Image: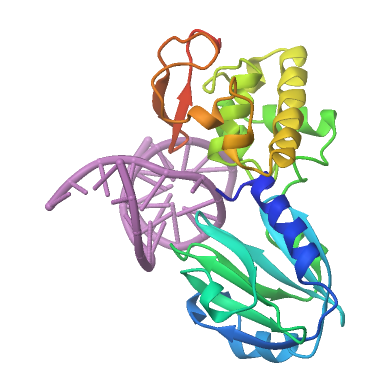
Length: 259
DNA sequence: CTAGATGTTAAGGT
DNA sequence: CACCTTAACATCTA
């Protein structure tokens, strides 16, 4: 489920396994995942090292020793896996970085909605993509502006990557649940204090999710995430409601989440 | 067999 | 033109 917390976990494991060893080869097993020229990516990256990992919203960047970076987006099913023996390669590896120290880093993507590309400059890339501030870096005032500028359901506002980068469908539901806010409430009509509550819920959810390794089984039982798809509200035990909002399946509790 | 699944984006409609 | 909604993308599972 690659939303901000998942990608942050990928970043940390990338930094723990894939820095400072010369990249000997980039195996492109499925070129359709490469944005831009696949050959240019291989040739540019070969012989360099990754200097560090950086995340913005749902994007991960592997900064290259010679400048620029490799960008990763995980779509709905993408993840990274470090391995040594071929038998340990993940089942849908699409691109594999092979390092001098014999480690290999696979980009696995079952549904192929993810992609990888070369970016000469990260800031330019973010501007070009029109990505908003990262959800963990945004300040309260900017958040208020971002979320309440337009007349639209809170759920849609939280997921708008051009105003707030990193929150996706599942975490938007969790944030709204914990802020006890209705997903169809319109932020532009709400009070400043409700927006502050939403902002703090967002921070708490994202940070605690990262602390739980983005693994729902490690998250508190009173959260929505470990119970997504279940009939009963983890808080009041009432009936959970399922509805398409902003084109995405939304789970919420009408008793706990008021407009 | 059909519907739906964490994301993004192009296309169509208002 | 701005805005919103839907379909499409590729693949697997319930």
